[in-house]
Image (cartoon, rainbow, N blue to C red; front, side, top):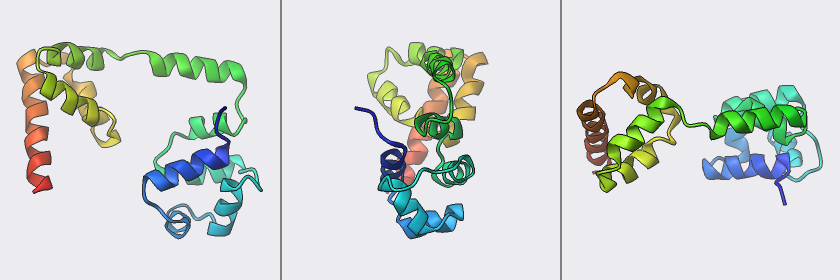
Amino acid sequence: MSLTIGEYLKKLRKKQNMTLESLQEKSGVSNSHISRIERGLREPSPDTLKKLSTALGADYADLMEIAGYLPMDCITRRLERVNRIDPATAKIKSVLSEEPELAIFWDQLSKRPDLQLLFKQTKNMSQKGVKQIIRIIQAIEEEEGK
């Protein structure tokens, strides 16, 4: 069973510990309208989805697909793109295959949008350089966690 757009938006909002009011502030969409969407009483317009995607840090095209605004062939092409591993990711996985602790840490980091550009830049780095970058980020994370 797939999620409705309302259920998906609610899940995104809750995952970020956002209230309806805080999402309203960030998106400009009234909290009552968001609530109606989440409960399945209203369908969001593409404009509303754009505002919510920005506020939630979600991919606009993903929201458009879930809401049913994009045709199935478009969804299929997007899934194919999403499932491909880019060269930088493949290189990092290969480099870290011998160091499980760093590989686990990198797996968590790789999901952070604020670090995506950094990881794309590693494709021309040496193996040693890639490991050093990840160790530096790990040290910073540990220091901030104290």
